[in-house]
Length: 586
Ligand SMILES: *[C@@H]1O[C@H](CO)[C@@H](O)[C@H](O)[C@H]1NC(C)=O
Ligand SMILES: *[C@@H]1O[C@H](CO)[C@@H](O)[C@H](O)[C@H]1NC(C)=O
Ligand SMILES: *[C@@H]1O[C@H](CO)[C@@H](O)[C@H](O)[C@H]1NC(C)=O
Ligand SMILES: *[C@@H]1O[C@H](CO)[C@@H](O)[C@H](O)[C@H]1NC(C)=O
Ligand SMILES: *[C@@H]1O[C@H](CO)[C@@H](O)[C@H](O)[C@H]1NC(C)=O
Ligand SMILES: CC(=O)N[C@H]1CO[C@H](CO)[C@@H](O)[C@@H]1O
Ligand SMILES: [Ca+2]
Ligand SMILES: [Ca+2]
Image 1 (tube, rainbow, N blue to C red):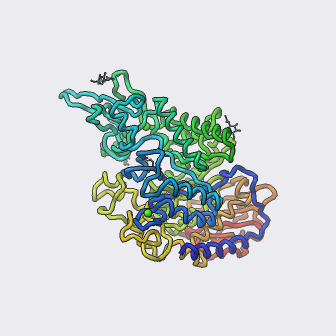
Image 2 (tube, rainbow, N blue to C red):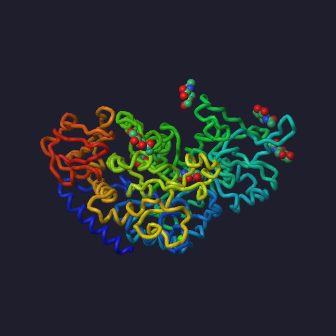
């Protein structure tokens, strides 16, 4: 099966390479991570090598060649560390051990070795905000063992007018209800910004800071190429009052936007998120990886950071002018704002906001999905999946791909009975679908065989999405035109100098059309036309970008009538409904 898939990959790649006969030059003088394409693997759902229904490290290792052939620069793995799996690995009980369901340290070493062989970098998820309540550090902290007393955020709480014990503040967990949990043994509350089993570490304790730096160095020693860092806005909280309690957060201005007092959206998170110390910690980690490289040599180490926060804060994650931070602060500004009904002028504005606010000397990045959000094929319409793929891959800088996006995978249907995500389970059988993150985590669709080729088990940990028989990697490699082939072509196109270094000139035409050019001096001019709407429109491209009388269609959405390689007259372009196209001036 693996071999069959590989042969298909090779055939398609040869065809793609042959098509790039035009002038564009390849660029290869940059840092390895620049203009990269980062692939997020959700290991539990990617490939099950031993038939227990759960994806694992050996499964990933088997597929590294496939990912390299598609053209990814690096792969980041959602957490693979030992965990009771309350939040599917984002609740780590041992930062130094591999989770047994995923394999062993030997398996991990084999994965890194194989990645080096095929030439793809491995990036690990670093989850600094919290540990599992089963973590040895937490157990020691509960017992007030020396050195661990203040490892977590503990508080006595308060006593109300009736003499009843109350949490130290009104803070809410991202997964609903109070963010404070009483611990009987220690006779104090601890803070958990996520589930009760995810206790927040106390970053105001220097021992915690140095312990986590030790963890980073440990994994760097295994030969990985960087970290993707989780949930940064939650790192620091406001300091407690001298009496040990904490200030309440105010209720949002317009309560009808989020009336449920147990839902975290009910409060303004002025004390629990986006504290300046959290961003400073990223600068410290950047210094750590720079220092590590100085000591050990080797290539640069990349940091990708996850923060749902304001545009201004996202820019600070890059650096503050004095100190550097993340190379790739995930562009959640783009992901959050871009809605199904966003118009062309709005989307152009989101793109330009990012481009103009970036500090100098850094690269943009574009992301539309991850394991926490409905897939963009589902969210923005499957008929427009290729259009958004074209957009992500042809804007300047780095692109981030969540596994399955290259196949235009859609969300799976997961019944209440099969729901396992804590955010879904904390809701109820009537509204769980608007909370559960299970649908975007269903297994990868490899082929049309049982369980989509993901696993030989009788039951997989989440059900496979029902469309796998027609929508899968193998079928897409064999079809004359497919989402995956479009993706592979785009990822190669990204190597061209105009797409790496060329300026971005972008405009909206009416409410539906986005048009932009990418051109570096002395290299080809590429023009991308995206029709977000359901109506056909005739367009004279030369009115916006001078393409002359002839342009070649490099690639376009699957349903497009313009075939790859045809020559068109740019002054008489017909923008088909929901279609994206990449043109090169001849
Ligand atoms: C703790 O101190 C703060 C600030 O002085 C005060 O507002 C709060 O009411 C006190 N809480 C208790 C339980 O005494
Ligand atoms: C918390 O309670 C303990 C036991 O009653 C007490 O010794 C300690 O001083 C209290 N801490 C604060 C900050 O009030
Ligand atoms: C409050 O939110 C509701 C629901 O989104 C909206 O209909 C209403 O106009 C908002 N009110 C104000 C004053 O913004
Ligand atoms: C930050 O990064 C820039 C661009 O890579 C580099 O020129 C500068 O020296 C770095 N600053 C520090 C403080 O490391
Ligand atoms: C997106 O909007 C279109 C109309 O513009 C609609 O047909 C489609 O159902 C919407 N998709 C989703 C997922 O809301
Ligand atoms: C996108 C992402 O990584 N989200 C994670 C943020 O952190 C919480 C808690 O660790 C996880 O539940 C999310 O999956
Ligand atoms: Ca397995
Ligand atoms: Ca925290």
